[in-house]
Length: 126
Length: 126
Image (cartoon, rainbow over all chains, first blue to last red; front, top):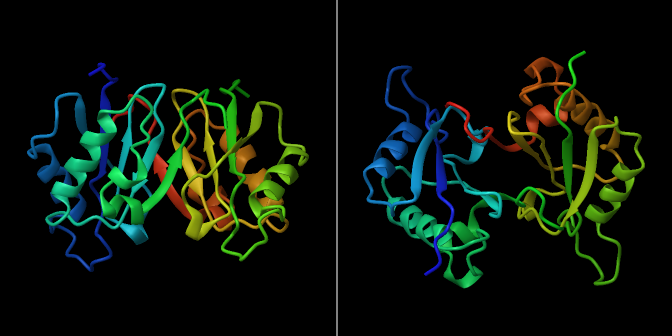
């Protein structure tokens, strides 16, 4: 396998996932970040907290990006307990690509149905 | 004013804006791209077509990004005829910042209410 650029998995840690919450209760986004940090992701994927990805109505949300040649993807409607395996699967496949474009049928079903946006690599042609 | 990094205004040109369309009819996204290309945006903002930003249910969509220090923003539910002034306003204010963070009250109302995601600059702290 060709070596690929490192990947960042950004997790919105302030996300309430639409739930009413006590001010000091742990946020679903923070729990998601915690779970992913211990999820045994492949080396080369760095989990990184972000305060608000501004997709509050469709949280929890993550971003996958990495290197100048990869498309960036935003995924939404993720659950801090139920979707860890899905995210590990999708992120691992993303990491294995050079351009971030995992073939449609190989993407986790949740990723196919809950993509908030994809953004081309800087310098890419349309 | 301090000089700022150039900005890219990416426009999804394949967007149907949820409309049923004939195969050869001009897409709302293509019309939006065309309108923005002639909208007299400030020098330093480059309008760039992208085939599918993968936000099809909430189109038309644009992305603002530029330089290693700026947050990237995705905006949605834009209309190819009615929202040109809004986009020019919001993109101009974005261009005038160093970090992409236009103060909330200064953002166009449509931008405040239709942000699909914001993504931190590469290397930014959370």
